[in-house]
Image 1: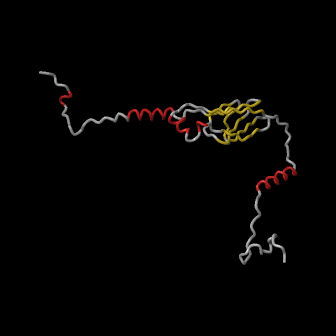
Image 2 (image 1 turned 45 degrees about the vertical axis):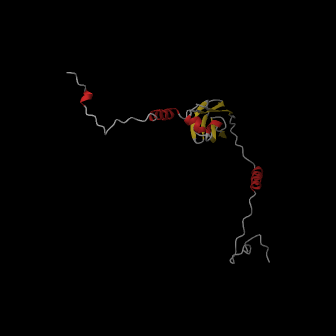
Image 3 (image 1 turned 135 degrees about the vertical axis):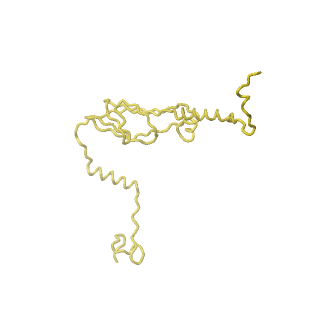
Length: 182
C-alpha cells in the first residue's frame, strides 16, 4: 500500500482559494520602507568660530555650545547669533541661513524625500571678539533725536483725522488746533 501524505488527507475546499498578495504590493512596501529609513538625509551644518575661542554660542534663545562649534540645524531663515565671553564685548548679529536651490519647495520633495541625494548645506561664521574696556558708551541726546527724526521722516506718517463734533461734522471741535478761531 502506498504511503499517504498529509496533504492528500486534507479536504480541498473550492470555495476558499488561497490568497496571495498582488505582485506589485511587495515592491511598493519595500520602496516605502526604504524611503522611511533613508529620506531627508541632507545635513545642515552651521560652523561658528571665534577669536579667542571658547565663547558661549547662542542661536535664537538656545545655548548651543562653545566655539569652535559645528551645529546641525533644522530650519533655514533669519536667526539671531550671539557670542559671550568674559572680558569681551557681547557679539550679536542677525544671521541669514538661506536655503540652497535643492532645499526649496517643490524641489526639496524630490531631493530630500523621494530621491534622498544626501545634499548638504554648510554655513561658516568667523567672529573676532573685541576686548571689553569696561567703558559704557552712551548715545548723545542730539544723535538720538536726529535718528528719531530720520526714522519719522522715512515713515511719512499722515496726520490724524479731525474728530467729529456734536453735529457729526469734522473740524468744528473747539479743541481742534487745525481749525482757526472765529
